[in-house]
Structure formats: C-alpha cells, structure tokens
Length: 319
Ligand code: FRU
Image (tube, rainbow, N blue to C red):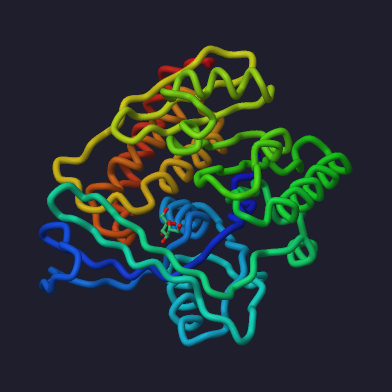
C-alpha cells in the first residue's frame, strides 16, 4: 500500500466544551469546575486527529456550519495538518456542540450533544472527491445511512475500475444505536468497528461472541472494543483474536477513546500487521489517550507505538 496516499475520515466534526469537575454535579446545584476547555470533537474528526498525530496524511470530510465556530475548526484542523478542503460548508446553520462533563474521580465522560440544524453529508458532496488521492476511506455510521450506502458503493465501483494496488480500503464505524439500521453497510466495508453499546443492541453479551457472530453472518472482518476488557477482532476465515486494555496510571479523560482505538487499528492495518497486533496497537493507543486530557498530546506516544510495531515485525504472527 502506498503509505503517502491519504486516509479520508468521513463523518461528524463538532465542538466539545469539556467541563472538568472534581465530583459529578448534583442536579439544581451550583459548583465550581476545575476548568472548561473548548476542543474539536466528533468521531470521524477525532480519528482523523489521532491518525494525523501519529504521522499519516489525513483528510476529513463532513458538513461544517458557517457560524462563529468555523474559524476555530479551520485553524484547529490546520494545526493538526488535517485537510478539510472538501468539506461542505452550510450557511445559516449552527455547529453541533457537545457539553462534556469530565469527572476527575474516574475519568468518565458524560456527553450532552446538540445538533439543531446542521445537515448530514450527501453522496453528491462525496462525488466531488478525486478518489485517486486516497488509500483508505473510513466512514462513521450516522443517520444518513442511505447516503453513506451510496458513497460506499461509489468507492466500490471505483475499486472495480482500478488495479489492485490502487484499490481503496473501506472501513466503517457503528457506535450509536440509530433510528435507521446500519447493519447492511457492513457488507460494503472491508473492516467494521462495532462499539460495546452496538454489540449489546445486537444481543451480544461480550466482545468475542460479537466478532464471531458478526463476521460469520457478514463474511467480513469485525472489530469490537469493550472498554476496560480490551478488544476482539475476527477475519471471516481466521481465529478470534483479543487484546487486553492498557489502563494508564491515572484515567484523565476517556472522550474519544473508541475513536482513538479505530485510528490505531487503521494505522496498523495500513502497515500489514496481523489482526491480533492491530488490536493491541489500538488498545495501547486508546489506553494512552485515556491518560491525557483531550488529544493534544497523543503525538507523544507515537515513538512507543512505532517501537512496538517494530517488535511485532520481528516476531511476526500470521493471524
Ligand atoms: C467522542 C465524540 C465527541 C463528541 C461526541 C459526538 O467519541 O466524538 O468528541 O462530542 O462523541 O457524539
């Protein structure tokens, strides 16, 4: 795979207003917080941030409201080297915003998200892209299921028209339980990341039965991260592989840990690591993320991750 080509992350970008509290607030009370931080958030946007921080060429595609926050989002993306030139700028709308309560007692994040008016991405926005630039396209499963379906099919058609080395790898994240069924998108993706919540919604009680059941059903590679228990993955024709979680000495902020796990897996898959090694890198990166506030310092673990990858290559496993 041409490592210089771009990884495109398609989905949500929003504002995260993180309020850091010593103890979780009581309803109808007044209390001082330790700090309030404004950050760029959204699953696909977070995955893009981590990928870029560990050295990938990254583009983000989504809708962006033309409101007072657009300059903040633009300058933040440019600071991280994330290309947003193809985003659909929507006039007269407000940027989606999350108020995130971070409890320092346990690092838990409570997300209160609002999106009053920003529309979702349409396939016609996606059609403007020059697909030759990309080696990987990651889709965040959102309520615009039908449009995502068309976008994924567009990439698959493109893949049918090019040589093997130019084919674009497609990945998909299904995290939230949506009013629309997203399961049938799995058949269009090479790799799908299911959250613990989504696995439970599908009636699975643990990560291993989820990856086994879903990869058997769909004939595709499935990943499932399960918080403190780590993660599991399965190729349709391989064994179930698992990794433990790598809990940091102090859990500071778990916001975006799942998005970081996905970035670690994509990064490792691009380097042809075995599936077991990929989830270990994903879990290590997600664990490191939980030990820092936001994603600003995630680049500091790049060296550790690269060393780990070198060790894996010396001790190569085929599954
Ligand atoms: C974390 C996150 C936050 C955002 C929220 C949107 O995964 O992407 O950055 O506020 O989820 O649902």
